[in-house]
Image 1 (cartoon, rainbow, N blue to C red):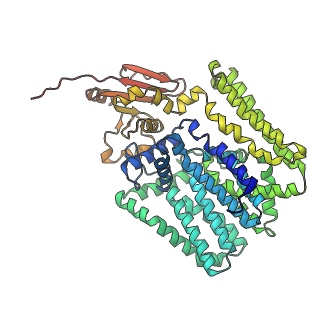
Image 2: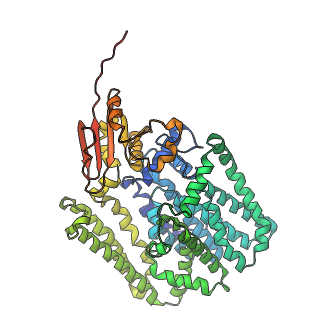
Length: 560
C-alpha cells in the first residue's frame, strides 16, 4: 500500500473518519438486526462459547459463526457499546476499500485512479448505509471481494507457484465467506467467474488448480464445522434446508420480491455517481475484448445481481458485493471521460445529486407540515431535528452544486455529498421512529423497573434482544410470539422461554410470587393496549413500545 500516500491518503482518511467512524456511537441500535447481532456476540463472550451462537439463551442457527467473531473481537476491544457493535461492519468496509484500491493498482498501475476508486466505493449510498450498520453483509462482501481479487491474481500468475498461491488465497477467502454466511459465499464467486473463464479460455486452469481452492476452504472451515456438528447435530440440517433452500427457492421464502426488485435499488445504491452507471456498464461490455479487466469487473458485478434477482427472497443488502466492481467500472469510465473533458456527463451527475438533495428537503418539509396526516413524522417541538435533517440534505445539494462548477471539472466533489448526511442524520430521527424502532430509548427510560424485575418478557425478538443488551442478561422471555427464535424454542431445554397469551395470566400469578415482572410489547401503529392482559401496576408507553410492570405479590414463607 505504499502507493496510497500524499493528499489522496489524507482525503480518504478524513472521509472515512467523518462518514464511518465519528457517527457510530451517535445513534441507538435499530431492531431487529443491530440488537440481534449485539446480543449474540455479548452472549458468546459471556458464555465463552465461540462455537454455537445463542440469542436470548436459545440456540440460534440462522448464520455460521465468523461474522459473530468479528463482533466478539470488537466488543472485547471496545467494550459493550454501540460503537463496538458497529465496528465490525466498518472494519470490513474499510478492508474492502483497500482491496478495491489494490485491484485498481493491479489493473491500471495508477495510484490516483486507484484512490478515486476507493473513494467512489466508500461514498456510495448502499455502502455507507450498510457499512455503518451492524449486519453480516459488509463482512461477506469483504470475503467475496477478497475472493475476486484472488481470482484476478490467478489470471495474472505466470508460474505454477504463483497460480497455486493465488488459488490458495481464493480458497481462504471462500472459506471465511462460508463461515460468515454459508454456502452463498461459495456459489457467488463461482457464478461470477464463469463468464470470465469462458471468455479467457481458462477452463483447463480452473480444473487443474481449482481443487487447491476447494481443499484450502475445506481445511479452514472444517474445524468449526466438525465442532458444531458434534455439539449441535441438527445445525447443518436446519442451516442448509431452511436458510438456503427455503430462503432462495421456495414459495414461502422470506422477503419475497419480484425479479425487477433490484433495478430501483441499484439506481439509489450507486448515488452520488448515478450518471456514471449506464456508461460504465456499456463500456465494460463494448471493450470486453481489448480490455479484459473491464469484462472481469462487469461479470463480477452483474452475475451476482442476476443470481439475487432470480432468488425469491430479496433484500437491498444482498447486492452489497456488487458495489466494489461497480466502483471500479465507474472509475475507469469517469477517468476516460475526464481526460477528454466531456462535461455533459459530469454535469448530469451533479444535477442528479442536486435533485436527490432537493427531493430530500421537500420530503422533510412535507412530512413535518401535516399535509400527510398518516406520515406526519415530526412534532412541532421537534423542529431542531427537522433543521438537522434539512442541513443533511442541504449539504448533499451544496456539494452537488460544487461538483458542477468549472464546467464539470470539479466532478469529484460529488464524493462529499454524503458527509453531512452521515454526521447529523442520527440526531434527526423523529421521536416516534425512535420510540418504535430503537428499543434502547425505552430500556433506558424504564431502567429502574426493568432492572428490578425477576422476569422480563417481550413479544418481539428484536425488542427482546435490545432489552437483553441493555440489561446485560440473556434470560428475556418471549411472550405470545416465537419470531426468528422459533427453532431454538423447540429444544427441550428451552421449555419456559415462551409464555403464550392464553397461559400468561396463570403464569403471571406464579411469577409475581418470586419477584416483579416486566412485559414489553411492540404495538401496531395506532393500536390500543390489549384489554385482555391483567391490569399492570405501572404502564409506560413510548409510541408503539409499551412497558407493563407488575409488582411482586408477597407470599407467606414458613420456616420450620
